[in-house]
Length: 252
Image 1 (cartoon, rainbow, N blue to C red):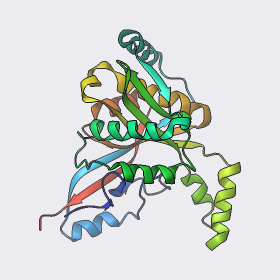
Image 2: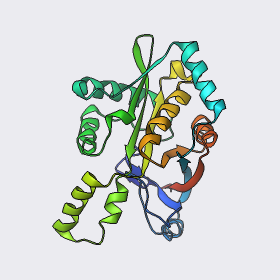
Image 3: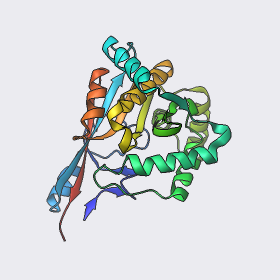
């Protein structure tokens, strides 16, 4: 028995064990602090720890990072482009391919079906910004991608005082006139054959620069403790661990 997953590791997962004092980012779970004790009392043990990193966006990237990214571009002749909404079906097929081959090294990874991905995309259309979804290209094809979302939880949290239909109306109104001040870098992955070329750093940098125009903080989540490349990139940009999630397990 392992979890919590809602319904798989591709969706909301884990128990929030540090950082409960404030609302979480879009598509990340929240729970009261006592939940961890409930799991422990039921005989479950922590099997994985996941982290969320807050990266402030008020400063420019360190000069060292900018130089590294420039070398990566020149050395590998890479290009970066944003999502093409006019060709969305084809773009979703590319994301589906990249998602399943770039994230398979994550512990507990479960391949996502194209139909499930398209269903998720329908839910995200109302909040996603195509300019914050990137592909990195080499050898004439897309070999990696990143997805950053505006943190619409800010809007939902501000509307919680309303009930029923009034809450939905207020949320819809706030989404139109109140732009989120924060964002969340949800997914970043590069094909296995291209992981030694620094493309993850390039995608991270591009996500940082676009988020910087509209937001004050980007949360990088979730990240496994052994994902050194992303953790180091977040720290280089001035990030710090802001929340911790844990996945529990029990043999039956």
